[in-house]
Image (cartoon, rainbow, N blue to C red):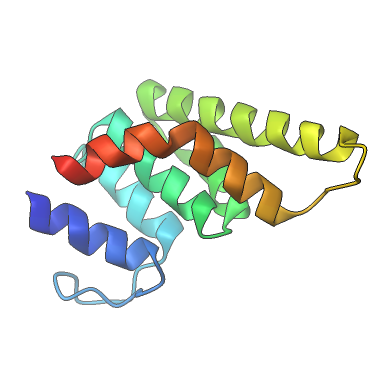
Amino acid sequence: MKFGRIATILMLAGHSMAWTMPQKVGIYTLIQRLAEQKVASAEELAIYTKLAVLFGDVRTAVKLSYSLNTPQARDAMISLLTTVGSAKAEAMNDPAGVDNLDYLIVRIRNTYGESMKKFWST
């Protein structure tokens, strides 16, 4: 099980060719397949999507929030997008004028760091 998670994370990190899958799989396709096949829990799907955001792929998270069919996965995505939205709003209201993806990534890492530590230790 842990090997599968690590392989998934490697794919999310940009290595889109997986040893276990015969074709190239993008982040969006991968997470959607995991959701449809109920291979991963809603919590795991949320973590994978958060990782996608950490790697700068916010568009993928938005796309996923509209396409996942399970209510739990949709709730997880909505929660994530709310966090991204509030971080972006904070960045725009920052007196220093910080309005960039780096700020969002740091904010999301700070918000979800503990969840990710738990994920790595399982």
